[in-house]
Image (cartoon, rainbow, N blue to C red; front, side, top):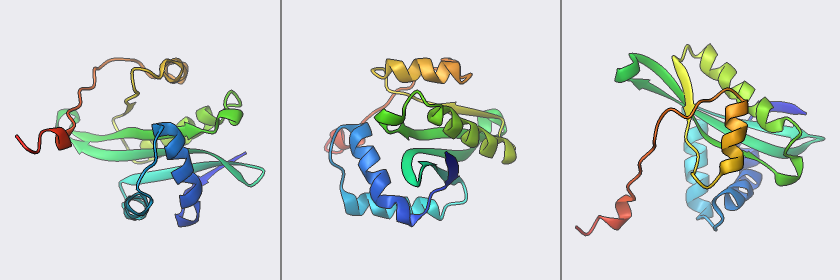
Length: 147
């Protein structure tokens, strides 16, 4: 297994990962636009896990300069491993690579958020060394645009 930077040729496979992850179809053209833009952003890193030349996992980390940390903070935004490749340390390898990127970029800490329903993922993140220290609150803005 190898971990490498993602590139535009990985788009179709990563798009399929996100359909599984989100449980719904996504607008492919908009997904491609965002993917391409983020590939060119020096504060966003996309990494791929490959096994026998098959893409089996994906992870991303975004870097933010935050006032309350007086420095850079890395946030893992997405992490996905194909179901049949789980429990093979691929997720751990992706996390390790994202942590290494954060350390190389001199980040103060690395954090992530996970849907409350993904309890298996929570256990995995804890095994990787993450601690549940915050609540994350969201507000869908499309729902309040007409207010």
